[in-house]
Length: 162
Image 1 (tube, rainbow, N blue to C red):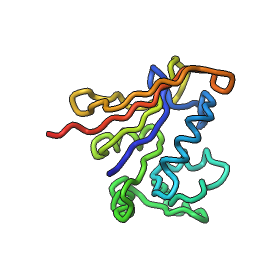
Image 2: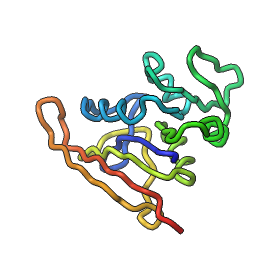
Image 3: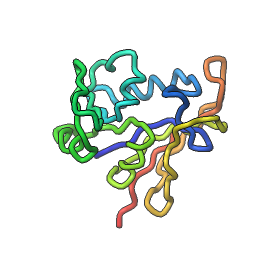
Image 4: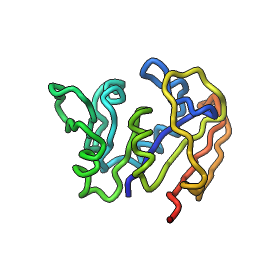
């Protein structure tokens, strides 16, 4: 089951200048819990935003650059190859960025979206979720608190059967 995982504002903002525009510790914990032990598929710019590879995950980095090599990652040149490489994983995750999310929307089975309740200035955006293709199956609101500047909701979507 190919799963897209992302955090996006009400205006679908993902980030700016290759970084996040909010800090939600509970969302980071959820991301870690869901993705640990799995393949994580991302674009090169998303990988470059990490200080180092995330522990206990297989990093599949999609890039057009033929000479892009880093220790601890697998470099591939298309989303299709990344999906094929992760066949042995019961739930690989697409973790960004914006262009990779757009490509994955046509082939993913599930979306785990943290909807940050606010609008944000951004240069990278999550694609619109088409209600005809996707069904919201779970929603869990988290109100802002001393660790979280914004209200946010965990939303789980499943692809509708044709």
